[in-house]
Image (cartoon, rainbow, N blue to C red; front, top):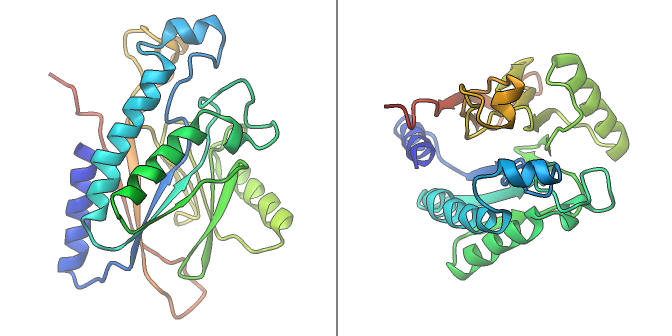
Length: 248
């Protein structure tokens, strides 16, 4: 709810500055759930709610607090739905058609069906594979979960080069998740998004026990058409901090 309110206010700020909102791209970069099958008995014992209920709650929250709110803007909404390594159902990201075989597949399709039944103007992109390349004002953007890709400038640049060579089309921007921390390189050409949750400070669960220190935050970009090709289409970036939520 906090995230949605901040995003909506930011969009209103752009409008007041004279910008026209052509469209909104919502990128879901995977790990929407923590499957209790991911690490055998350890995952099942580490999750405070079961996988089925996680899927149900994710559908409710994303539809009601995110998609319906963004639809209020009145602009075309594109929802890019990438699978993550924790959306696990025994297949993993390096098996055949991971997007179609993991638990994110029914979750994303349920969101798509609910949105269509509500007559919301939205296009859902749900790849059967592991990534998707999207076009924003002529700029190609790679969306991928990013497991196995280092969260550094060189690693991300090299990974993008592999996808460019693989697809035989020039890709300018790369967006990935997985690492739980926001990282931005080369004027936001290569970006790691954060997570909605932070890591435990008391060592109650896996990430806190392992000593990870992810701060909950999400990043938002605004794009404009360019008359030249010397700059990216990005004119503004904004990190939405969420770590204060739940503090006493």
